[in-house]
Image (cartoon, rainbow, N blue to C red; front, side, top):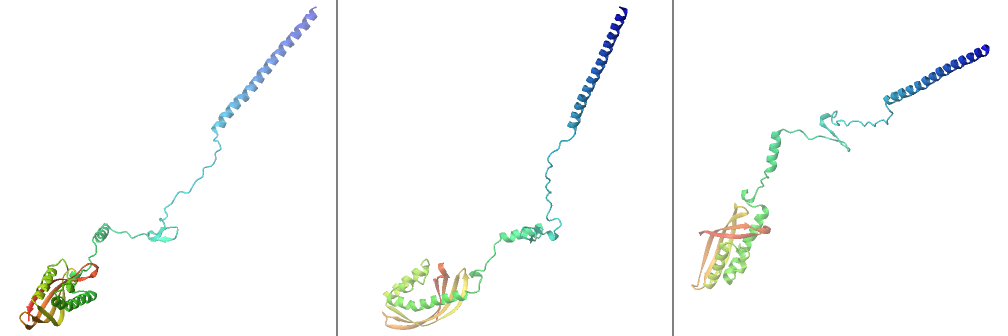
Length: 240
């Protein structure tokens, strides 16, 4: 019986030892299992600390000054080199502004000593026609012969119209013997004076007499629209 009791105690001890061994083994396994967990946690933290891979940013070259290395300030364009405008000082800019603000003064007829060649020809033709038509107007009492040669806005226009009618009513006839157109002088803008030597044979019908009369007259002519010259005035300076 004691032998049996000793065997039982032996098995109990073995069971206890076996239990302790299993406990240590389980505790070791748990420690082993917990360690990887900690390692995994630590690895996760380490992973978070490692920079993630990202798509590399495209780096574009910074614009540079194209004129930095260009001599004499040349500007590089798509079609070639173009020289830069020269630098000017403030005084030059002011002088250029003043020159551009003041229009150029063109010479006018009033600043000339006489008419141009074309104007002189026009004036000569005007006086030739007037001298030829004047006796016709007086002898026929028809102002229409010379009215288109005189400025209608002038006093001379109305004076000649009255004179033509008066001489016709007094039965006075005139015949042109000769005339000579002398100097042509500028007296204003597009205005000229012409000295004319004239000689007329005047017949006084009511008195039945004839007389040669010589004059030195000064006509004033002016250029109007479309370059047309008209007589604006007449001064009888002397009767020879």
